[in-house]
Every structure is written in structure tokens, then in C-alpha cells.
Length: 607
Ligand code: DON
Image (cartoon, rainbow, N blue to C red; front, side):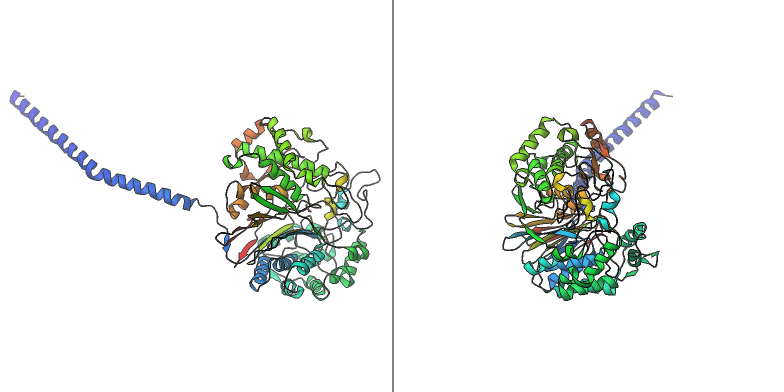
């Protein structure tokens, strides 16, 4: 190849190279001048969009809102009954009483005529009231009534059959509330329940499952099979559920007030049913039953005032005690759900449940050291003990020691919360104890008897169905009320209702209410988020953390194990802790928020 050619080729290549380099520079400057700003703009837009849209996408679940009034219960039928009462001018107490009767028809596993409950009321004029209509031990009851000849506790007697039934208080309590604080007539508030019982209501899936799961218990009693099956066949979702006998009982109450239940034909049917199966309730027990108005348990948590239920509920005292301990921690700046957070709340729970065991019972029969238990000084002493353990779980035996055995969980009992346009708030929890109570329908009267006697301590050191222990404070005596965990609570902000809350869940009621309150106050959650957030529970004995599956990550669980905690893993996949039904009121903007716990399938209905 000639040098010229070579040179020429070289110069040609060079030219090409220079041309390519220039072209690239041109493109680069084009990219820089045009595409880069466009690209930058594009990414900026994407970034802004992400920042703007992300909160909307991950936005917390929102509660139901209303301007005038709200009713939240675990039965959509009952919530609608309540909101209709509010719409026609009734106050929160009228609505609560109507919901109470409606739940006896549309949520028979816990709503009731044959059980008892607690109602906490905040009146718009600032007065706070609690009404105790808890069941009582029959006149013939005695300390050792559930022990066999060898002195052993026989749970079959305290949990099943008519021997387990306490004297019912719900009808007397609802009528007392209406007569003293309501504005409508008994006919107006009870009629919707009568209509639902007489004309029937459609079973949802939850109801048909509840009914069919309980057939083994119902099958012990022909009167119960008659109501809760179709001639022995299980009810199906969508079936119309008519309760003619229950409608008749409700009519007797409508016509005769409390005497329609505690005297006359209904009372006779109840006593006949109890007597035929060896139980204790007599006509005298029924006639003597009276609800009691009691001084609320009050507390203050980070500037919010708490109004809750006194003994025979353990709820108010135990709740205030735990909150007083936790007030010493800066929870807001902790990661909710972290091992540190769980450690603090679990330790507060353990100390409070230990005190529940030793000191709480019906204060009409036992000197409950209420003032000490809810004092800030006492809480400070507990806080210091927790701190001195230096991030280690204090073993239950170092708090106090008793014998341990497995516990059975259940999620019955039911809570409802009401707020009206006048500024009154009502928080009510009611129960027949286990799901469907004793499982015994009173023949001809259509309602279930409770099995509440199991909430007494049948023998010191022996657990009841919720794994709760008791001592002398909660021993059985005639006409005494068995200790409860029901915690209907109202929280005030600057003197006005802020939160109305409560839950079922046996021993887990108080810790459920605690965590919803912490979620609202410390973590600024809306009421729906606060209710839906997964929960944990510790009750001192058994010395284990109960938890909903989503409440603890594997990492947090591992950290807690290293801190000395044990876990109750049995049934973890299906476990729920409580079914909270709550209202939050934004007084400044006049917005009422309601949320029914998805764990239960109820309804928040507002208008
Ligand atoms: O009064 C009590 O504490 C119990 N009888 C409540 C029972 C209850 O919540 C059932 N569901 N778990």
C-alpha cells in the first residue's frame, strides 16, 4: 500500500474520527441543553408525584364520619336501630338502650336479656355516671359451691348448665338508664327489637357460622336447639331468623317494665328452666335484683381525662394503673411495635394484672384499695421496678407467684359506643360471659342464660376460663357480683368527649382498650387505625405474651426472647385480641368519627 494511500487513509480516518467526536460533542451538548433538563424535569415530576401521592396511597384507613351522631356496635341491625333513635331526637342514652335490646335479638352470642353489663355515661352538662347491672350470685350461693367432695374445683359446674348462671341484670339496668337519663318511652326504644325478633332478620355468614359451631353445646338442651337450628339442621347464611318467644318476652317488658322480666310469667319460666337443671336462681333472687349507680374510676393520661368502670369491674382500675405507669415513658418517640415498646407495655400489664388478682372484687363485699392502685405515686414505684430490671422481663414469680394452667380464649361479650348531637356519650359493654353464655335458652321465653358465675374465683389459685386467678377479694358470696374485665370508657379532652371505647375479650378486654388509647393519644392515629392495629396481651400469669400474628415481626420477637419473654403461640393464625367499637370526636371541627373493629364485622352508623 502506497504511503499516500496510507496517509490519505489515515487522514480520512482522522477526519472521520474528528467528525464523530464533534458529532458526539454536539449530541452531548444537545443532551445537556435539551434532553437533560427534560429528563431532570421528568424525574422531578415523578419525585413530586411520588411525594404527593405516597401519603394518599399509604393513607391510613379512614373511619366513618358524621356531623350529628354516631352508633358503633358489632351488629349492623343494632347500629341502625340506634341511629334511627338519634335521628328522631332521642339522646345517646335512648339510643344505647335501644341498641342493648336490639343486640339481644341480632347478636345472641353476647347481646342479651339474660346477662349483665356496665354503662358509662358522660352527660353534656359535664356529669359522669356509671351504671352497674352486672349479674349477682344467687342467695343460695356459697364460697365452695363449685368444689367436689375432695375439695377440687369443678369447672363443668361454674361454666356449664344452669348452675353457672348468675341473676341477670341487663333488663333492670337498661330500664334504669332509660328512666333516669333517657328522654323517650320504653315502648319507643324496645319496639325495634320486638320487630326484629317477630319479623326476623337475615343471618350473615358470621352468624350462621357462630350458630353451627355452637350446635354441640345447644344439643344438650332441646329449648336451645329449637331456637338456634331449623329442626336440628344448621341455619344457613341468608336465612330469615325469627324468634317468636323472644319477641313475646320483649313484649312483656314493654307492657310491664322491669316487672315484665323479674316477676310474672317470664320470671316463672326462667326459674323453672334453672330448677329443672339443678341451678340456683329463685323468684326471690329475681325480685331482689337492683342495678347500682357507682362513682366512676377517673384518671388522667397526658392531659386527657379518663372516665371508666369501677368494681365489680376490674377494667377502670387496671386501665388507669397501666396508663399511669406508661405515662413515665416517652412512648411517642418509640417505634410502635418495637421490642422496647412491647417491653414497656407488657411489664405495665403484668404488674396491673397481678394487682387485679390480689385486690379486686366487688367493693360492696371487699375493701378494694382503689385509691392506692390508681395513684400516680404507686405507678411511679412500679415504673421504677421495671426500670431497675434494665430491659429484662421480670419473671411473674418475682411479681407474685401462683399455680399456672392453660387458658381458653373466647371473644364474646359485646361493646357499643354512642354519641349524640347534644354532646352526650355512652359507652356500654354487656355479656353473658362465654359465647352464647351457658347455651341454655329459657323454654318459652327465647333468651339465653349467662354462665357468669365462672368469673368468680371458685377456688384460690385455680384459673377460670380466661386463665384469670382470684383470691378472697373475688370469692363467692350470696348477692355478690363477680369480678369483670369489661372496660367501657370515655376519654375527655378539655372536659368534652374525645374517645368512646370498649371491647369484649375476657381478660384481654383491658389491654385492648389500653392499646387503642395509646394508639390515639401517643401515636395520633385516627380511631379506625387505632382499632385495626394489631395487639398484644400479657396478664402476668401465664407468663407469656399473647399476640396477634401481625403484632410482632420475627426480629422483634427474637429481641424479646433475648429480653426474657415467653410467647403464647398456640392458635396464633386465628387469634384475635378484642373486638373494639369506638368513636372519636373532633370537637373543634364538629366531626364525629366511628369505627367498628373488622375483627368482629359490626357497623359504625352515623348521620
Ligand atoms: O365480665 C367479664 O370480664 C367476662 N365475663 C367477659 C367475657 C368476655 O368478654 C367473653 N369474651 N371473651
